[in-house]
Image (cartoon, rainbow, N blue to C red; front, top):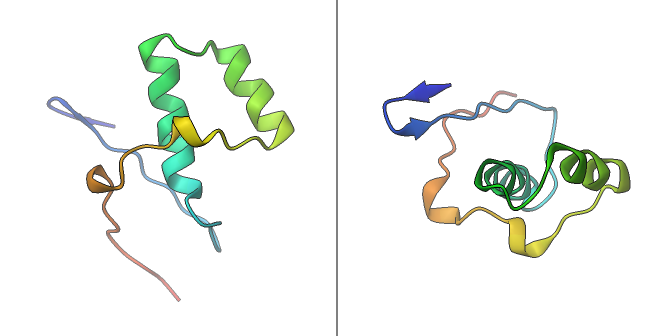
Length: 68
């Protein structure tokens, strides 16, 4: 969801792999920048690829809540 110039991505899961959210956000940024097409993203998801270069900087991600 957008909040002015910021784009908020809300994720929820029972658990996450190390750097999984950074990879998801980084991949979406690549699509938004035109570096990847939607098909490139679909292919990466199908291969369960985690390209290190597609990671979002950690300083821009915030943990808001943890539920147990």
